[in-house]
Length: 246
Image 1 (spheres, one colour):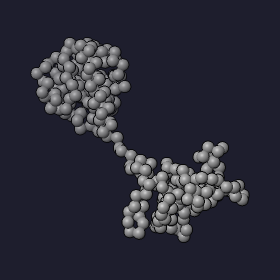
Image 2 (image 1 turned 90 degrees about the vertical axis):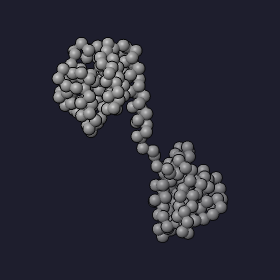
Image 3 (image 1 turned 45 degrees about the vertical axis):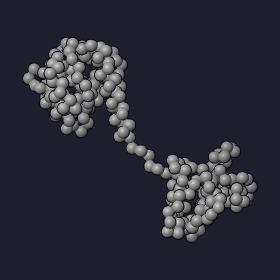
Image 4 (image 1 turned 180 degrees about the vertical axis):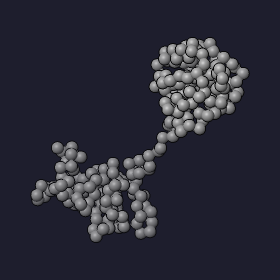
């Protein structure tokens, strides 16, 4: 739903336009004004999405108001709604989205509202920040090993272990000594199948072939390369939930 504001010095014209905009069910009129001064203050306060603006006001010029609106913190879209078609070129010079003529026709007003909606939607999509690339999007983990930057397929990771503050990443065919702490790798692998199972281990749940019980309610993961990864008691419940075992 668009927030609309109407600027026109003719009450009947404002009422007619408000009625037609209401019939589209896409515009909610948040305010009206009949002069440049009252319009500028109200628009700054109400922050409408779109302003329907007459060009010839009793003592003011709508073009001047359009220029002043362009410096607001939240700049509204402008649609000129006027009886004078000779100002069309000037209207688009101040970045108006559309130009509708009096007497207003319902179908023409509806097309204008649809145009504003589509343009605003496209603008919002362009402005939306793209999520950063990461393991969950690329399927790979970038690591620094032996003065090289390697891209490791997440699916190939078996587990990551830690000892003396250094990490060892084990894949189905290789082992990599990393200077990166385990906690950093855990954050970077969030949202993937590689999860924390022990204070010193991350394990790829897709690489688990068997779960063996251990003492004190802990357990051991047997991995697809036949290596074994311990699961501490504090992580056992969460692991079972992830695997659908509880």
